[in-house]
Image (cartoon, rainbow, N blue to C red; front, side):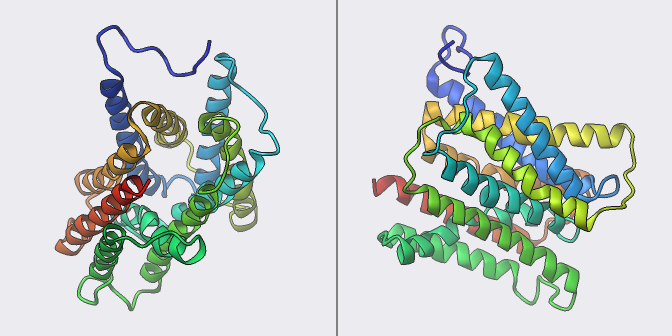
Length: 306
């Protein structure tokens, strides 16, 4: 078998299949944030994060092994495994899961998705990339969105837990941006999907010490709610989401997928409002539009500059 991507039925184009897979990824990622928030009463955040990425790794290992595509990373791929596993997944997951104890899922998803906004000035400063008009416009638009979210009328600066939660979401975005900047110059040997389970395994290794040290004696409420939440987090929110994203990129391109994945925070916000009772305020809605618009402009600028 030459590919782990299943063949499309006759009559279905590559584009149609790609957009369908992108839709699956958006739904999986969008639903993950409310699931993490909802899991709080049943399992501590560090244990849930570690467990879900470990389950995702096992599933992807099994899929790659069944398709004959499982490979051990080479020395040339080791930096990609460590960088993505530590910064894009490990630290990101630890910070994100802990932050969602204090931050609504929709707001948390939006802040954590702000990574491309921070990549723009960092790439210009450290990698010498041109700060084009479209990139600059995207940066300004995204920063305006963050300004809206943190304005004194829509943000409680007096609550330490609110400050902590929002700050951790931004730190998660910074951590992701470190991996992106590192990967800009990486030469790939194995495919991103072949490296994905190894990166998730590294992420689980990063999360495990936090679980053992900070949540050593903790109560876990076993039952079907926890089982379903963990299965969503590991199977749908991690393994299926990564597989769908990589498969969609192969068909419709990275830029289209990058812009399309911005639907994730929208889905997260909608689910949080409908099922978790989180309010859709004017501040959140305005910040959502501005930040996602800024990210979209940055993603398009990245494509047009190539």
